[in-house]
Length: 335
Image (cartoon, rainbow, N blue to C red; front, side, top):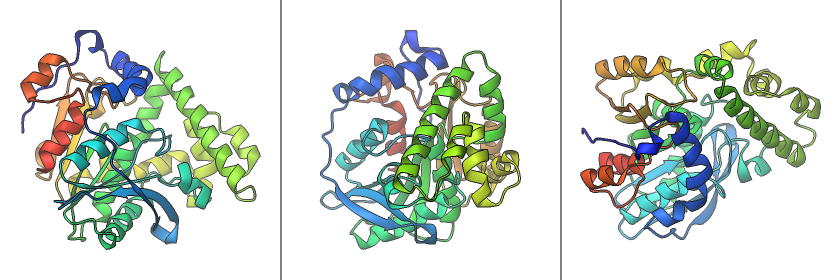
């Protein structure tokens, strides 16, 4: 598998691609998406520790497999348009689709006060959701997917599902691989620090929603102190998980340290110019993938963070009907 990726000429900067995707394509994505929205059914799954997790699923006639997926660090199923593109495209190609609000997000936050754990529990959540989807009529093989922090969770799902025969593998876009290094890089970068502040603001909003749903479980004073991503994890996450420091928590949850041990095939799409991650991670990921036969890596020079909007020439070269290069490559790969 050696597809080529080229962005439009004005999006050759990782930062410009990231901002354009988040601010412009998020409003106009349906204009570039051919497939219609499936008719989803709602379902409450039971995750690790019997935590209730809200999800939706759709099963086409004669499905040939199932995709189980979630989104990144903030958002809900209602507004994560990039995930809904996957649902449309996968369903149109004959796959059952299961999408879910992960812990502390969307309707799952209404159902449970459980906070995020960056994969420690979400990996098993993926496995349990996949198994319960079988009972709903979603067939194997089952593929676990996600992007950004959701990509990190999906990698944990592949790890947790190593002995589950129905889970075939996974595919991720711009996954968070090493949180400590990337967050340190982001906060020190002249422009990156503004991206960090925007994410931290959304995390505080998320925590505020949890407090509203579960006022006795979430300390509002801790929310006030959580003014950064690091602060969110320090004030709200690690006390419940038993970690002494945020750095210990990041070391325990970063997928970079278990990629070499995965026993099921995984496609990783990653951009060398991703402005959210430490740029030294690209070469390190390449070195791991070159020695790990289970990992197929598409490491592109351009693409930004969860962008990879393709130029018209790129679409013609890859015989794509739309600019969603990364989802097209993933669906091509699982065929």
